[in-house]
Image 1 (tube, one colour):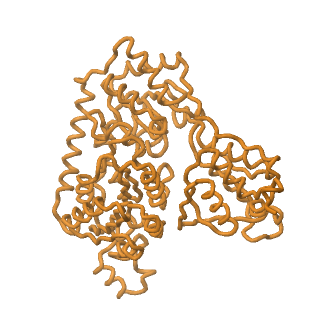
Image 2 (cartoon, helix red, strand yellow):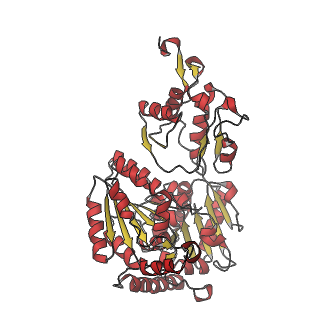
Image 3 (cartoon, rainbow, N blue to C red):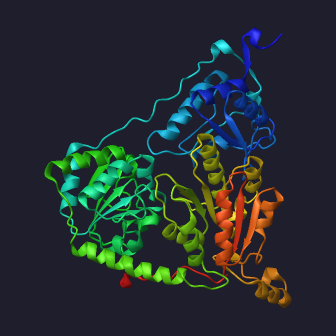
Length: 523
């Protein structure tokens, strides 16, 4: 007699049904008992399951064995509460649907973030009476809130009084899908803007009002900054001197009330949805037709600095040396990448220089190590992006640009790409180390000097490591690249191949570095 005829179901089917009800289309994971059954039930519910390789640290123990020293017993819910918006374990089998719905809703409402639901091993295979399970339908889209009208008036008064205004477009603007309204604000009011790393592409990086090439000067000399879904954290130097003017006025636009006033008191705080608030600003601006003049000294200063920095970068990019430097590599990559590709990037110099040289032209098309600077996320991001691209048939390439050290954190995910035939293009910018390395000849000399554990600098990695052969081993295409010609040829071949992933192992000068950073006094 089947469980169905007894009006009972196994919890794993309840779990998969609850997840499916929240319109979840993809599941990424690593299976083991009892997660195997959960993944299989999810597939039976129509969810696409992608099996990954990189498991950092997990634990699982039956609830009825807590405090007994069970295998992998650990206070998982409490531990995850520190790092997620919501962390819970259903108190009973019939509460699973409610907890899953709340987790999904919490992840999307307000500032988006990760959530954690713990379902113990003994719950997974338990039987539950169908009549006791209350299946909660999919949560509605997040509500949209607008700023107080008085706050809008105050913000516009501050902005109109600016001599050196600057808009900073953050990833909150990308999440809020504010690109249309922001384009109208920037172009209608003639304002300069600066994107944060994952705010790139909300407006195209080649937009005439983008002043990213004069970032340091724009931050230091602006007298009014409009923060649009960006935070005054380390990425923006906390909004403090010496990188900002000590008298700068900040107009803060954010959907998180707790973010208002962090590190400095805003001249105006606009709480709500970025897209809705920009439309509010536009409504007021349209009434009086205000526009920041194009012939100001501020615009002249910014354009001069942009031109000077572009000249310096171009000189480095057009060097014809072997081994290549970072700027040569990124120059040729930028010439060949499709404008609609998704760029994933992580590393130290690789990510920092890539932010300035690899343009984004579309919103939500850049993923990098983010606020925490977490290495190892790149290949996972690329797999997720390529999975969505393929299933939605967007025709957009996913290009993952990695430092050699960053690639090492999750390098085995190339097998995942090969297994699912995801045509990700990985470019490993290989300088034989973390920040910098040594060449093969120097490495050999160090080996003769004594034990490498006492002689080799801690930042060094194995010179000319064959990351391309790792990809070849799993059935992808690996390319060893030393010259500009080899780089262009390999990248063009990879971009034309939609059947399998590719990896370009680009060997550069181990001593290559970022262009010299000016001090505050030189800005």
